[in-house]
Length: 453
Ligand SMILES: [Cu+2]
Image (cartoon, rainbow, N blue to C red; front, side):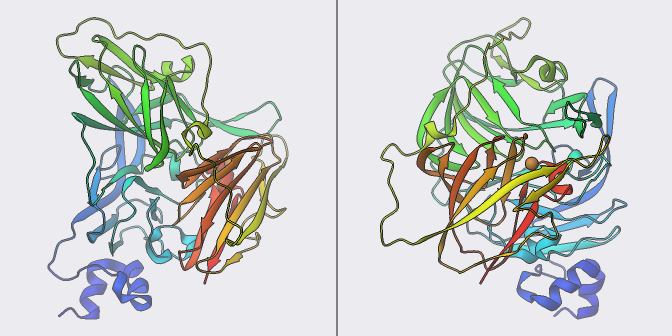
Protein backbone atom coordinates (compact mmCIF):
# COMPACT_ATOMS: atom_id res chain seq x y z
CA UNK A 1 0.00 0.00 0.00
CA UNK A 2 1.15 3.47 -0.76
CA UNK A 3 -0.08 6.47 1.15
CA UNK A 4 -0.81 9.76 -0.48
CA UNK A 5 2.11 11.24 1.44
CA UNK A 6 4.50 8.75 -0.13
CA UNK A 7 3.12 9.50 -3.53
CA UNK A 8 3.72 13.17 -2.86
CA UNK A 9 7.27 12.47 -1.90
CA UNK A 10 7.80 10.24 -4.89
CA UNK A 11 6.42 12.32 -7.61
CA UNK A 12 6.04 15.93 -6.66
CA UNK A 13 3.22 18.33 -7.20
CA UNK A 14 2.68 17.76 -10.89
CA UNK A 15 1.88 14.14 -10.26
CA UNK A 16 -0.43 14.95 -7.37
CA UNK A 17 -2.76 16.99 -9.48
CA UNK A 18 -2.79 14.07 -11.86
CA UNK A 19 -3.53 11.66 -9.07
CA UNK A 20 -6.47 13.67 -7.89
CA UNK A 21 -7.94 13.80 -11.34
CA UNK A 22 -7.24 10.33 -12.61
CA UNK A 23 -5.62 7.71 -10.44
CA UNK A 24 -5.34 5.25 -13.33
CA UNK A 25 -2.88 7.48 -15.12
CA UNK A 26 -0.54 7.32 -12.24
CA UNK A 27 2.57 5.22 -12.25
CA UNK A 28 2.98 1.89 -10.63
CA UNK A 29 4.05 3.30 -7.34
CA UNK A 30 6.15 2.54 -4.30
CA UNK A 31 9.28 0.43 -4.75
CA UNK A 32 8.53 -0.61 -8.30
CA UNK A 33 11.01 1.28 -10.42
CA UNK A 34 9.66 2.75 -13.65
CA UNK A 35 10.40 0.93 -16.89
CA UNK A 36 11.95 4.09 -18.29
CA UNK A 37 13.21 7.28 -16.80
CA UNK A 38 14.03 10.62 -18.36
CA UNK A 39 15.97 13.34 -16.58
CA UNK A 40 15.78 16.82 -18.05
CA UNK A 41 18.93 18.84 -17.46
CA UNK A 42 21.66 20.99 -18.94
CA UNK A 43 23.87 19.32 -21.50
CA UNK A 44 26.98 20.35 -23.36
CA UNK A 45 26.75 18.74 -26.78
CA UNK A 46 29.97 18.21 -28.72
CA UNK A 47 28.73 18.73 -32.29
CA UNK A 48 32.23 18.77 -33.83
CA UNK A 49 35.69 18.19 -32.31
CA UNK A 50 35.90 20.54 -29.32
CA UNK A 51 32.91 22.52 -30.57
CA UNK A 52 30.14 22.53 -27.99
CA UNK A 53 26.52 23.63 -28.01
CA UNK A 54 25.10 24.33 -24.56
CA UNK A 55 21.57 23.05 -24.43
CA UNK A 56 18.99 21.15 -22.41
CA UNK A 57 18.58 17.43 -23.01
CA UNK A 58 17.15 14.15 -21.75
CA UNK A 59 19.53 11.89 -19.78
CA UNK A 60 22.52 14.06 -20.68
CA UNK A 61 22.48 12.92 -24.31
CA UNK A 62 21.28 14.07 -27.73
CA UNK A 63 19.06 12.61 -28.95
CA UNK A 64 17.47 11.32 -25.75
CA UNK A 65 17.39 7.53 -25.29
CA UNK A 66 15.64 5.49 -27.98
CA UNK A 67 12.47 4.23 -26.29
CA UNK A 68 11.44 0.87 -27.68
CA UNK A 69 7.91 -0.02 -26.71
CA UNK A 70 5.75 -2.94 -27.71
CA UNK A 71 2.31 -2.10 -29.06
CA UNK A 72 -0.31 -2.72 -26.41
CA UNK A 73 2.13 -3.50 -23.57
CA UNK A 74 1.82 -0.92 -20.75
CA UNK A 75 4.92 1.05 -19.80
CA UNK A 76 5.75 3.29 -16.87
CA UNK A 77 7.90 6.37 -17.27
CA UNK A 78 9.27 8.77 -14.71
CA UNK A 79 10.41 12.24 -15.69
CA UNK A 80 12.66 14.31 -13.43
CA UNK A 81 13.05 17.97 -14.18
CA UNK A 82 16.52 19.15 -13.23
CA UNK A 83 16.28 22.22 -15.46
CA UNK A 84 15.47 25.74 -14.30
CA UNK A 85 12.18 25.94 -16.20
CA UNK A 86 8.77 24.32 -16.20
CA UNK A 87 8.80 21.39 -18.61
CA UNK A 88 6.34 19.13 -20.30
CA UNK A 89 7.09 16.10 -22.51
CA UNK A 90 4.87 15.48 -25.53
CA UNK A 91 4.47 11.98 -26.96
CA UNK A 92 4.18 12.85 -30.61
CA UNK A 93 1.98 10.51 -32.63
CA UNK A 94 0.77 8.42 -29.69
CA UNK A 95 -2.87 8.07 -28.67
CA UNK A 96 -2.76 9.26 -25.05
CA UNK A 97 -5.23 10.97 -22.71
CA UNK A 98 -4.88 14.78 -22.60
CA UNK A 99 -3.62 14.64 -19.00
CA UNK A 100 -0.42 12.91 -20.11
CA UNK A 101 -0.19 13.70 -23.83
CA UNK A 102 2.19 16.50 -22.97
CA UNK A 103 0.57 19.79 -23.90
CA UNK A 104 -0.35 22.20 -21.14
CA UNK A 105 -3.05 23.63 -23.42
CA UNK A 106 -4.82 20.23 -23.23
CA UNK A 107 -4.43 20.02 -19.46
CA UNK A 108 -1.16 18.14 -18.95
CA UNK A 109 0.34 19.63 -15.78
CA UNK A 110 3.80 21.15 -16.24
CA UNK A 111 6.68 19.63 -14.26
CA UNK A 112 8.21 22.38 -12.12
CA UNK A 113 11.98 22.69 -11.68
CA UNK A 114 13.18 20.06 -9.19
CA UNK A 115 9.95 18.06 -9.48
CA UNK A 116 9.05 14.85 -11.23
CA UNK A 117 6.05 13.17 -12.81
CA UNK A 118 5.28 9.54 -13.49
CA UNK A 119 3.02 8.10 -16.13
CA UNK A 120 1.75 4.69 -17.08
CA UNK A 121 0.29 4.23 -20.52
CA UNK A 122 -0.29 1.72 -23.24
CA UNK A 123 1.69 2.70 -26.33
CA UNK A 124 -0.18 2.78 -29.61
CA UNK A 125 -0.25 2.95 -32.57
CA UNK A 126 2.81 0.98 -33.68
CA UNK A 127 5.53 2.65 -35.70
CA UNK A 128 7.90 5.57 -35.59
CA UNK A 129 6.87 8.16 -32.99
CA UNK A 130 8.91 10.62 -30.97
CA UNK A 131 8.96 12.61 -27.77
CA UNK A 132 9.88 16.23 -27.28
CA UNK A 133 9.37 19.26 -25.10
CA UNK A 134 6.19 21.26 -25.68
CA UNK A 135 6.94 24.57 -23.96
CA UNK A 136 7.06 28.01 -25.51
CA UNK A 137 10.41 29.49 -26.48
CA UNK A 138 9.51 32.97 -27.70
CA UNK A 139 12.69 34.90 -28.44
CA UNK A 140 14.86 32.50 -26.41
CA UNK A 141 16.30 30.20 -29.09
CA UNK A 142 17.78 27.88 -26.45
CA UNK A 143 14.35 26.74 -25.25
CA UNK A 144 11.54 24.53 -26.50
CA UNK A 145 12.23 22.67 -29.73
CA UNK A 146 15.38 24.75 -30.30
CA UNK A 147 16.93 22.66 -27.49
CA UNK A 148 18.12 19.06 -27.39
CA UNK A 149 14.92 17.84 -25.76
CA UNK A 150 13.88 15.19 -28.26
CA UNK A 151 14.15 11.45 -28.72
CA UNK A 152 12.76 8.61 -30.81
CA UNK A 153 9.95 6.26 -29.79
CA UNK A 154 9.75 3.01 -31.70
CA UNK A 155 6.55 1.06 -31.04
CA UNK A 156 7.10 -2.50 -32.19
CA UNK A 157 3.99 -3.88 -33.92
CA UNK A 158 2.30 -6.92 -32.36
CA UNK A 159 3.26 -8.86 -35.46
CA UNK A 160 6.65 -7.72 -36.52
CA UNK A 161 7.04 -7.63 -40.29
CA UNK A 162 10.65 -6.46 -40.08
CA UNK A 163 13.01 -8.38 -42.36
CA UNK A 164 15.98 -6.07 -42.47
CA UNK A 165 19.64 -6.66 -41.89
CA UNK A 166 20.10 -3.47 -39.93
CA UNK A 167 18.02 -0.53 -38.80
CA UNK A 168 19.17 2.98 -37.96
CA UNK A 169 17.30 5.83 -36.28
CA UNK A 170 18.34 9.29 -37.46
CA UNK A 171 17.29 12.61 -35.94
CA UNK A 172 17.82 15.86 -37.87
CA UNK A 173 18.33 19.04 -35.86
CA UNK A 174 19.46 22.65 -36.18
CA UNK A 175 21.38 24.59 -33.51
CA UNK A 176 22.63 28.02 -32.49
CA UNK A 177 19.62 29.80 -33.92
CA UNK A 178 19.42 33.56 -33.95
CA UNK A 179 16.61 35.79 -35.12
CA UNK A 180 17.38 37.38 -38.47
CA UNK A 181 15.38 39.77 -40.57
CA UNK A 182 13.77 38.13 -43.60
CA UNK A 183 12.84 39.80 -46.90
CA UNK A 184 9.47 40.98 -45.62
CA UNK A 185 11.01 42.64 -42.57
CA UNK A 186 9.81 40.12 -39.95
CA UNK A 187 12.21 38.02 -37.87
CA UNK A 188 12.90 34.31 -38.41
CA UNK A 189 15.44 31.93 -36.85
CA UNK A 190 18.61 31.07 -38.78
CA UNK A 191 21.09 28.43 -37.61
CA UNK A 192 24.82 27.88 -37.89
CA UNK A 193 25.04 24.21 -36.91
CA UNK A 194 23.01 21.28 -38.26
CA UNK A 195 23.39 17.69 -37.11
CA UNK A 196 22.25 14.10 -37.49
CA UNK A 197 21.99 12.42 -34.10
CA UNK A 198 23.70 15.40 -32.49
CA UNK A 199 26.89 15.21 -34.59
CA UNK A 200 28.07 17.11 -37.65
CA UNK A 201 29.08 15.30 -40.83
CA UNK A 202 32.33 13.40 -40.35
CA UNK A 203 32.29 13.68 -36.56
CA UNK A 204 29.62 11.07 -35.89
CA UNK A 205 30.27 7.35 -36.31
CA UNK A 206 29.64 6.16 -39.87
CA UNK A 207 26.73 3.85 -40.53
CA UNK A 208 28.57 0.61 -41.30
CA UNK A 209 26.97 -1.63 -43.89
CA UNK A 210 27.79 -4.61 -46.07
CA UNK A 211 27.24 -5.13 -49.75
CA UNK A 212 23.89 -6.84 -50.37
CA UNK A 213 22.29 -5.77 -47.11
CA UNK A 214 18.88 -4.21 -46.85
CA UNK A 215 18.80 -1.49 -44.25
CA UNK A 216 15.95 0.47 -42.70
CA UNK A 217 16.38 4.15 -41.97
CA UNK A 218 13.89 5.70 -39.57
CA UNK A 219 14.31 9.46 -39.90
CA UNK A 220 12.77 12.19 -37.71
CA UNK A 221 13.05 15.91 -38.38
CA UNK A 222 13.33 17.36 -34.89
CA UNK A 223 14.22 20.87 -36.06
CA UNK A 224 12.34 23.67 -34.34
CA UNK A 225 11.58 25.44 -37.59
CA UNK A 226 13.32 24.09 -40.69
CA UNK A 227 12.43 21.47 -43.30
CA UNK A 228 15.20 19.16 -44.49
CA UNK A 229 16.08 17.39 -47.74
CA UNK A 230 18.18 14.21 -47.77
CA UNK A 231 19.86 12.23 -50.53
CA UNK A 232 22.31 9.33 -50.69
CA UNK A 233 24.37 9.24 -53.91
CA UNK A 234 24.57 5.86 -55.61
CA UNK A 235 21.40 4.68 -53.89
CA UNK A 236 17.69 5.33 -53.78
CA UNK A 237 15.17 5.16 -50.96
CA UNK A 238 12.12 2.95 -50.89
CA UNK A 239 9.60 4.92 -48.82
CA UNK A 240 7.59 2.49 -46.70
CA UNK A 241 6.02 4.71 -44.06
CA UNK A 242 5.24 8.37 -43.43
CA UNK A 243 4.98 9.59 -39.83
CA UNK A 244 5.37 5.94 -38.80
CA UNK A 245 2.35 4.71 -40.76
CA UNK A 246 2.79 2.32 -43.71
CA UNK A 247 1.83 3.99 -47.00
CA UNK A 248 -0.57 2.38 -49.55
CA UNK A 249 1.96 2.75 -52.40
CA UNK A 250 5.60 2.42 -51.39
CA UNK A 251 7.80 4.20 -53.95
CA UNK A 252 11.44 4.40 -54.87
CA UNK A 253 12.69 8.01 -54.65
CA UNK A 254 16.03 9.79 -55.00
CA UNK A 255 15.37 12.34 -52.30
CA UNK A 256 13.45 12.74 -49.05
CA UNK A 257 11.79 15.83 -47.64
CA UNK A 258 10.83 16.15 -44.00
CA UNK A 259 9.23 19.24 -42.55
CA UNK A 260 9.54 19.77 -38.79
CA UNK A 261 8.07 16.81 -36.82
CA UNK A 262 7.63 14.59 -39.88
CA UNK A 263 9.07 11.08 -40.00
CA UNK A 264 9.95 8.88 -42.94
CA UNK A 265 10.89 5.19 -42.84
CA UNK A 266 12.81 3.97 -45.88
CA UNK A 267 14.45 0.78 -47.03
CA UNK A 268 17.77 1.07 -48.82
CA UNK A 269 19.38 -1.79 -50.73
CA UNK A 270 23.12 -1.55 -50.24
CA UNK A 271 24.35 -2.46 -53.70
CA UNK A 272 26.93 0.18 -54.50
CA UNK A 273 30.03 -0.37 -52.38
CA UNK A 274 32.01 2.66 -51.34
CA UNK A 275 32.05 5.41 -48.77
CA UNK A 276 29.13 7.79 -49.21
CA UNK A 277 27.56 10.86 -47.65
CA UNK A 278 23.92 10.62 -46.66
CA UNK A 279 23.36 14.34 -46.46
CA UNK A 280 21.23 17.45 -46.67
CA UNK A 281 20.75 18.29 -50.33
CA UNK A 282 21.07 22.05 -49.86
CA UNK A 283 24.80 22.84 -49.82
CA UNK A 284 24.75 25.40 -47.01
CA UNK A 285 22.89 23.05 -44.66
CA UNK A 286 25.24 20.15 -45.39
CA UNK A 287 28.15 22.56 -44.87
CA UNK A 288 26.64 23.40 -41.46
CA UNK A 289 27.01 19.69 -40.65
CA UNK A 290 23.88 17.85 -41.66
CA UNK A 291 25.08 14.53 -42.96
CA UNK A 292 26.37 11.13 -41.95
CA UNK A 293 28.90 8.84 -43.63
CA UNK A 294 27.74 5.45 -44.90
CA UNK A 295 30.65 3.07 -45.12
CA UNK A 296 30.68 -0.35 -46.75
CA UNK A 297 32.87 -3.03 -45.19
CA UNK A 298 36.37 -2.98 -46.75
CA UNK A 299 35.68 0.32 -48.54
CA UNK A 300 38.09 3.20 -48.07
CA UNK A 301 38.54 6.77 -49.12
CA UNK A 302 36.91 10.14 -48.78
CA UNK A 303 33.10 10.05 -48.47
CA UNK A 304 31.49 10.76 -51.84
CA UNK A 305 28.70 13.29 -52.37
CA UNK A 306 27.00 14.06 -55.67
CA UNK A 307 24.98 17.22 -55.80
CA UNK A 308 21.39 16.78 -57.09
CA UNK A 309 20.29 19.66 -59.28
CA UNK A 310 16.64 19.89 -58.28
CA UNK A 311 14.53 19.36 -55.20
CA UNK A 312 11.56 17.05 -55.56
CA UNK A 313 9.00 15.68 -53.13
CA UNK A 314 5.35 14.74 -53.56
CA UNK A 315 3.19 13.13 -50.89
CA UNK A 316 0.54 12.00 -53.33
CA UNK A 317 2.72 9.40 -55.06
CA UNK A 318 2.42 7.30 -51.85
CA UNK A 319 -1.41 7.35 -51.83
CA UNK A 320 -3.79 4.60 -52.88
CA UNK A 321 -4.08 4.09 -56.61
CA UNK A 322 -7.82 3.33 -56.53
CA UNK A 323 -8.76 6.76 -55.37
CA UNK A 324 -12.02 6.12 -53.59
CA UNK A 325 -14.56 8.85 -53.04
CA UNK A 326 -16.38 8.89 -49.72
CA UNK A 327 -19.47 6.70 -49.75
CA UNK A 328 -22.77 8.56 -49.81
CA UNK A 329 -23.93 7.29 -46.41
CA UNK A 330 -20.71 8.30 -44.66
CA UNK A 331 -21.30 11.80 -43.41
CA UNK A 332 -18.16 13.89 -43.34
CA UNK A 333 -18.45 17.31 -41.74
CA UNK A 334 -16.20 19.99 -43.24
CA UNK A 335 -14.18 22.24 -40.93
CA UNK A 336 -12.46 25.08 -42.81
CA UNK A 337 -9.32 26.42 -41.14
CA UNK A 338 -7.67 29.46 -42.71
CA UNK A 339 -4.07 30.32 -41.83
CA UNK A 340 -2.94 33.93 -42.02
CA UNK A 341 -0.21 36.10 -40.58
CA UNK A 342 -0.10 39.66 -39.42
CA UNK A 343 3.06 41.71 -39.72
CA UNK A 344 3.72 43.21 -36.30
CA UNK A 345 6.57 45.52 -37.21
CA UNK A 346 10.18 45.41 -38.32
CA UNK A 347 12.31 43.40 -35.94
CA UNK A 348 9.32 41.46 -34.58
CA UNK A 349 7.97 37.98 -35.30
CA UNK A 350 4.76 37.76 -37.28
CA UNK A 351 1.54 37.03 -35.42
CA UNK A 352 -0.30 33.92 -36.64
CA UNK A 353 -4.04 33.36 -36.92
CA UNK A 354 -6.41 30.48 -37.53
CA UNK A 355 -9.76 31.73 -38.85
CA UNK A 356 -8.78 35.24 -37.93
CA UNK A 357 -7.81 34.56 -34.32
CA UNK A 358 -4.59 33.85 -32.43
CA UNK A 359 -4.31 31.39 -29.55
CA UNK A 360 -5.63 31.54 -26.84
CA UNK A 361 -8.46 33.46 -28.54
CA UNK A 362 -8.94 30.83 -31.25
CA UNK A 363 -12.27 29.03 -31.33
CA UNK A 364 -12.33 25.59 -29.65
CA UNK A 365 -14.15 23.35 -32.11
CA UNK A 366 -16.49 20.65 -30.76
CA UNK A 367 -16.23 17.18 -32.28
CA UNK A 368 -18.70 14.40 -31.71
CA UNK A 369 -17.12 11.07 -30.89
CA UNK A 370 -17.29 8.60 -33.76
CA UNK A 371 -18.05 11.25 -36.38
CA UNK A 372 -15.78 11.93 -39.30
CA UNK A 373 -14.54 15.39 -40.14
CA UNK A 374 -12.71 16.92 -43.07
CA UNK A 375 -10.27 19.61 -42.03
CA UNK A 376 -9.83 22.02 -44.92
CA UNK A 377 -6.57 23.90 -44.50
CA UNK A 378 -6.37 27.14 -46.45
CA UNK A 379 -2.92 28.60 -46.21
CA UNK A 380 -3.33 32.23 -47.17
CA UNK A 381 0.11 33.16 -45.87
CA UNK A 382 3.49 33.43 -47.58
CA UNK A 383 5.03 30.69 -45.40
CA UNK A 384 4.79 26.89 -45.46
CA UNK A 385 3.29 25.34 -42.32
CA UNK A 386 3.81 21.81 -40.98
CA UNK A 387 0.56 21.46 -39.04
CA UNK A 388 0.17 18.79 -36.38
CA UNK A 389 -2.89 17.28 -34.73
CA UNK A 390 -2.30 15.70 -31.33
CA UNK A 391 -3.67 12.32 -30.20
CA UNK A 392 -4.99 11.20 -33.62
CA UNK A 393 -4.01 10.22 -37.13
CA UNK A 394 -5.60 11.88 -40.12
CA UNK A 395 -5.97 10.69 -43.68
CA UNK A 396 -4.65 12.96 -46.41
CA UNK A 397 -7.46 13.52 -48.96
CA UNK A 398 -6.47 16.45 -51.16
CA UNK A 399 -3.44 18.63 -51.76
CA UNK A 400 -3.54 21.62 -54.11
CA UNK A 401 -6.55 20.21 -55.93
CA UNK A 402 -5.22 16.64 -56.29
CA UNK A 403 -7.27 13.97 -54.51
CA UNK A 404 -5.72 11.01 -52.70
CA UNK A 405 -6.50 8.48 -49.98
CA UNK A 406 -4.90 6.04 -47.59
CA UNK A 407 -1.95 8.16 -46.41
CA UNK A 408 -2.15 8.41 -42.63
CA UNK A 409 -0.19 11.15 -40.92
CA UNK A 410 -0.17 13.35 -37.85
CA UNK A 411 1.75 16.23 -39.41
CA UNK A 412 1.35 17.62 -42.92
CA UNK A 413 3.11 20.41 -44.73
CA UNK A 414 0.66 22.94 -46.12
CA UNK A 415 2.66 25.08 -48.53
CA UNK A 416 2.24 28.83 -48.91
CA UNK A 417 -0.92 29.67 -50.82
CA UNK A 418 -2.05 26.04 -50.98
CA UNK A 419 -5.18 24.23 -49.79
CA UNK A 420 -4.94 20.78 -48.26
CA UNK A 421 -7.65 18.52 -46.87
CA UNK A 422 -7.42 15.72 -44.34
CA UNK A 423 -10.04 13.54 -42.67
CA UNK A 424 -10.14 12.43 -39.08
CA UNK A 425 -12.54 10.31 -37.09
CA UNK A 426 -13.11 11.89 -33.67
CA UNK A 427 -11.92 9.20 -31.32
CA UNK A 428 -9.87 10.98 -28.66
CA UNK A 429 -12.17 12.24 -25.90
CA UNK A 430 -11.23 15.57 -24.36
CA UNK A 431 -9.01 18.31 -25.69
CA UNK A 432 -6.61 17.84 -28.60
CA UNK A 433 -4.18 20.51 -29.64
CA UNK A 434 -3.76 21.47 -33.28
CA UNK A 435 -0.86 23.72 -34.21
CA UNK A 436 1.90 24.62 -36.57
CA UNK A 437 4.99 22.65 -35.55
CA UNK A 438 7.28 25.53 -36.34
CA UNK A 439 8.18 26.76 -32.87
CA UNK A 440 8.17 30.45 -33.79
CA UNK A 441 4.73 30.12 -35.39
CA UNK A 442 3.10 28.21 -32.52
CA UNK A 443 4.60 30.65 -30.03
CA UNK A 444 3.01 33.49 -31.97
CA UNK A 445 -0.55 32.21 -31.86
CA UNK A 446 -0.71 29.35 -34.42
CA UNK A 447 -2.57 26.93 -32.14
CA UNK A 448 -6.14 25.88 -31.43
CA UNK A 449 -8.03 23.13 -29.63
CA UNK A 450 -10.57 20.51 -30.57
CA UNK A 451 -12.83 19.16 -27.89
CA UNK A 452 -14.22 15.68 -28.52
CA UNK A 453 -17.13 14.42 -26.48
CU1 LIG B 1 3.75 27.58 -39.29
